[in-house]
Length: 578
View (cartoon, rainbow, N blue to C red):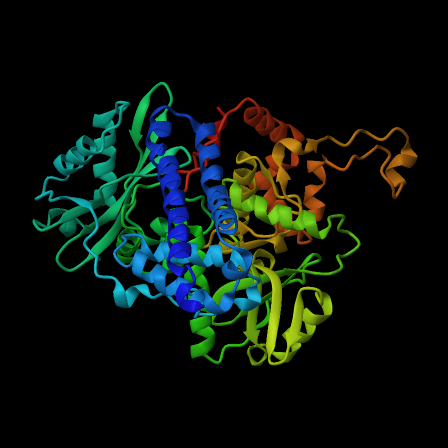
C-alpha cells in the first residue's frame, strides 16, 4: 500500500498552503511602509494583530483542504507519514525560506494528529536544513565609507532611505545624528579611514517607527547601529537617534516588544545578519522579532531538548512568591520559566481557567511596548522524569494534577506557557543598593505608565508580578488580571458620610467589578515605607484617578500614544499626551 499512497500529493498540498500563508504575510508586511508614510497608526496596530493571527488561520485552511481531498483512513495513517516528510524534503530543498517551511509542516501535522504521535520520523523535530542548505549568501546591505566625513555619509544614508514624506528638518537631524555618533564612539574610530557603515537594505517597521539596522565597523572592531525614524504628523519624517550601544540595541529587539515588519527574501540570511551584530541574542528570539514567531518556537524547543540532552540540569520551582493562579518552574541553566495553571485558585482570585488562557493569548496580540514578556504556548510537553527535582515534581502534581501526569519514566505537561526568566522585582529590591532601588522603582512606575499608554491595565500591580531583566528593565509578566485600560472605571473614594464610616471595616460606598481607586495603591503596593515614599516622589501621579482618565480619553479619541524602545531623554509620555 505504501508505494501507492499519495505522499507527494499531500506534501505538495501542505507546501501550497505554506505559499499561500507566505504571500498573505508578505502583503501585510509590505503595507507597513505606506502605513508609516500615511501615519495610519490604528491600521498599523490592526495589521500587526492580523499578521499574528494569520498563521493559525492558514494552518486551519490547509488542514481542512487535506481532509476534503484525501480519505480519512489514508490521510491519518501515521505509519505512512515518513513518506510525506521525505517527499516534502525534496520539494523544499532549494527554497530560500526552507527552515520556515519545516515549521509549517510540523504545524499542519499537529493539527491532524494528537501530540502523542509526534516523532522525528513523521515531522521535523530536528531540522534537516543545515546539512542541505546550499543557498546561503551575504545579506542585502548598503555600505557607506565616511573617509573622515561622517556628515556626508549620514547625508547619503538619508538620501538612500527616502520616503514619500519629506524629512521635517533634514539639516538639523544630520547635525544631531553626527553629534550623537561622535559622542558614542571613540574619536579615533570616527577618524579611521577604513570606517564603514553597513545597513540592511530594507527598513524595519514597528508601531509608529521605521528603523535602519546594521553595524558600524573598522578592521578590528564593530558596533551595532540602529537609526530610528519617526513620522511626526503634519511635520514630516524625523531621523531621531543613532544608537550604537549593544545593550540598547538588544532592548529594541527584546522579547518584550511587538514584532517588526520587514521585507526579507531569505529569513535565515537576515537572522544571521542580526546575530552577527547581537551575538547575545538566541536565534529563536531573532526569528520571533521579525514576525516568524512559530519558527522561533521551533528553535526554542530544539534548544531546550538539546540542553536537556547535553546537561545534568533538572527542573526546580522558580524562586519567588508562589502564585495564586499559576505554578512556575524552571531549569537553572536555561533562561526560561514554564508556567502552568493550577487546578484550584486562591480565594482572592475570581477568574477561571478559561479566562486566564484568554488573558495570556491576549498578550500575544497587543503592543507589549517593551513592558510585557512574550509567551509561547505549548501542549503536551514530554520530559524525562529524571529531569525533575523530586520536590518540584511533587509540587506540580499536587497543584495541577489535571495538567501534570506521570507516564512511566516520562512527565507529561499537557499545557503550559514559556517566558523569559527574570528576577522578581520584590526579590531584586531586597538586595539592591540605594541607587538600584531608585532606578528600579522609577522604571517600575514607567512600566505601568507605558502599559497604560498602550491601553493595558495590569490589574494586579504587586511587585512580585514584575521582573527585572538582565538590562535592568522592569517588565510585567503575570497576566491573569490584565484588561484594556478603557474597560476600567477609575474612581475617587467619596468622603465618609458619618464619623462611623471611617471606622468601618467595610467601604461606605458601592464598588463595581471594574472599579479601581488609585489612591489605594500605596498601601497595597508597598509594605516598605521608604519605598512607598520614594515611589510617591517618582510617580505620585499614578495615585490620581484624573491621570488615568486623561490617558483613557486620549486612547478613546483614537490617539496611538508614543512609547519609544530607546532612551529619548525621558520625553516619551509627556510628548505623547500633549
